[in-house]
Image 1 (cartoon, rainbow, N blue to C red):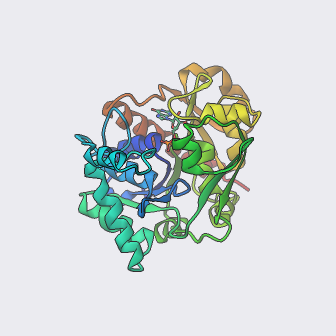
Image 2: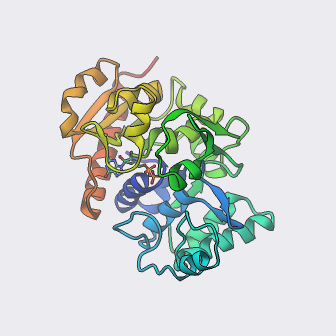
Image 3: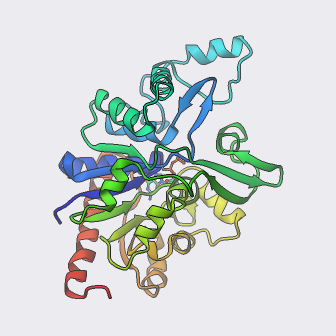
Length: 325
Ligand code: GDP
């Protein structure tokens, strides 16, 4: 396969696969578009958790154990904040802090979120193109029995404890795609779209809620779209994806995620533990590749990325013989 690859990513799972893809592709052939539904203002700082996880991971600066934030972090700021009676439910490491301060400063001066992301990623030595899905604010809101919550209230402050009744993506209808996303959608040489193993409702949902991307993914003629299941053997590798699926009354398996993505996806990469679900996916007309879908280390990231690229290539090759209507 030649041509650019567009990866749609949330936080940790998406960042890991994006890192693998960056190992496998020349920098100019990869574009990573990142969820901003988790973004929020906190203590006057502009925080974009998924962008930061992706950029830190691609820059080799991420903390490996936590998956988010920077390696070799210290926490003096949080300790002092606590001593002064500040809101301490959202952890911000000392090294991490500068990024949020600088981003807020650039945004206040009128720069777009995309411009700030491009600038800061370059300064961290990231050569792959990374951009938010949109520079316009999109905010994920979670309806629970206790009322509607802002995303970080649900996710961090309340540790995903309230049962989820519904999710909406405020601002998504009006959000224009970032220049990188618009450029990929207009690129006639775009080779494939990879939907990374990110939380479908919290990380990919906000992107699908943007009408431009949704309509583009639902077109009859477009590059192959391959998704990596974030659910393995009925559980999420991390985070609340499985809980949310159960709360929403959905099947907690790749089939529930496949129902959500629908015909926006042409092929599924699933774990060997879920091989029994392959016929159900194939009966929906979707191709399936079965592998070890867990990324434990960098070797796994690179291996899974190579498999995903080959799989997308095989779908593209099959289409060349049997084009879609
Ligand atoms: P968050 O923003 O930190 O919640 O991170 P993501 O949007 O990346 O969502 C986490 C999702 O990625 C969860 O549903 C995990 O099950 C999934 N995930 C994380 N690591 C892996 C992995 O190594 N393999 C697979 N298949 N899924 C993963």
